[in-house]
Length: 460
Image (tube, rainbow, N blue to C red; front, side, top):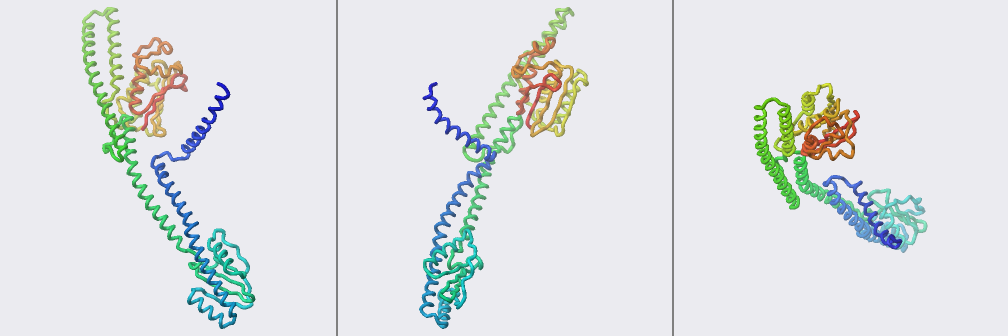
């Protein structure tokens, strides 16, 4: 590739990397549940809109109203100053104070020989203090002092007139828009009502999705779907639920047809094998006849294993099962001596499984371990919503690159394990099929005993 081609690729890969980083950032910080994510989608625009409305209201309406109110107060004070300067007598001052109280709703007093108080620290976010200062500076040319903090319902304004201090006490609502909290209360209250409605609506919309998920999980675990499950919710969710029900019906119908067909095949083949066994029973016990009888037993065993694998134990209903007791039965029924099979059980092993199918699954694994090892250890525990069963042996194990191949039907690994043993190559395939029908899996690994570890995990 030439250098020019490299320069053409670089601009395309950079935005892709940024998008991936942003996607990963969202994946790490967004909630995992659909309900929480949907709430964020609903709440975020609402909060942004309220912030914009509040900002516009504060900067435009609130500031504008406060400006006009402060300007009116400043002009009233300028008029009082002008009246006093035109006739600074005591009688005139009393008349001015009376007029200001009756006509302007201002408390006015004159203090000869007084001075302005010391300047106090101003509030950081006081719109009234900022506006009133600005309007008084325009309307009143004399030095002045204001206090918008000391008295909660009033504003104290003092103006120095030569040797007299004019003191004006005005109501705060005359110079400041004090009904802002009503707007905020209405905005917050309406948001809470809308949010409550949205939460109720979202719960009703997400509930059918949760029910569909539960039904799919139950079907994947080999359990019956909830009895009250039916298509609900939005049209898309209903279509998904209907598609799931049709898919489940097709799968169940296919299993039933396959089981019925295999039952007929089993009956026909068993009839023929029974005839062969009857004919062999009437023959003399010669070495050739004994070999034929052994072949017939092996054929019978292969037939049973094949039918069990193809049938998948799909006709059995799930039930609450004590796994500890089931493993005890398997241990006692090995026929190889209880001392060769160890059992270690954890607490809380009461789970829902197809008992006979699951027993067959574990039995196949234990029998497989006993074929290639002298000692077997079964460990069962419940952890993080999973039932985990380990079957360990002290055999030679299986090469790691062959771990998946041994689960293929009729696949045999006798060359690597033990050439003196015989089997159909269906034991592990049947066991994995049963585990997957329960929504679980079977994996192979290295055993602490030196041989092979077979791990069964199913959800509970």
